[in-house]
Image (cartoon, rainbow, N blue to C red; front, side):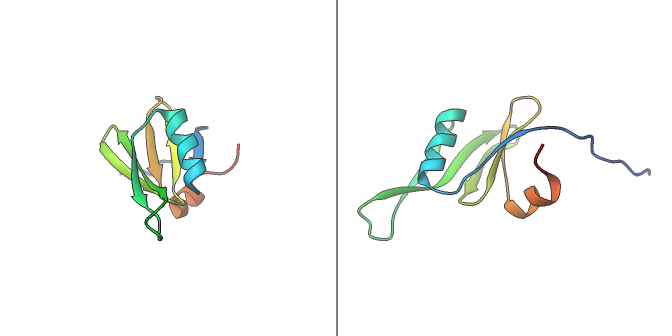
Length: 89
């Protein structure tokens, strides 16, 4: 068994921070979304995005990063993992 280092790769990524950003991500990626009612049950707000990935449909929540991989695929990434794995290019 040897040790290996991940090759440096530049990816596009968007952070899902609020309903407006969720709408922009969904529009840009042409992906499905899940709507839930807000606290007052009168205004819908987007708090989850359903992303079709190579491993099946994955859910992104507020705060998660949405990454476009090297082959054009999309997948969500939790903020703590994103911070440990990526830095601005």
